[in-house]
Length: 140
Image (tube, rainbow, N blue to C red; front, top):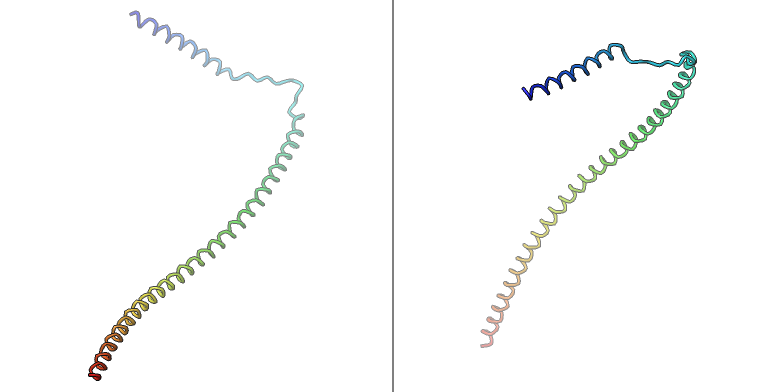
């Protein structure tokens, strides 16, 4: 019973505040209009203000349009340069592959020639030893 009593009081306060706010909202917000200011007095000011804002917006639009065109031209130039760079890179890769194959072929040819030279050198040594053996037999 003791706990329920404060809850009932809080609920009553909330209901009272809610009903008070609901009544105030039904009446609508209060609008204070000075009697000296008439809507027709403000009309020329609004038009000139709107025209100046439109002019400023038009200038900004033209400036942004020029900047966009400039950026688009720069982007197109970069795309052309990138395309040319990619083409040059492919050509470079192709030439590098060709040269690497030629280097490998020349290395293999060099290795074979070294083997052939060493065989010829060994044959030369054998022939020289045979020749010296034949000459030594002649002298005996």
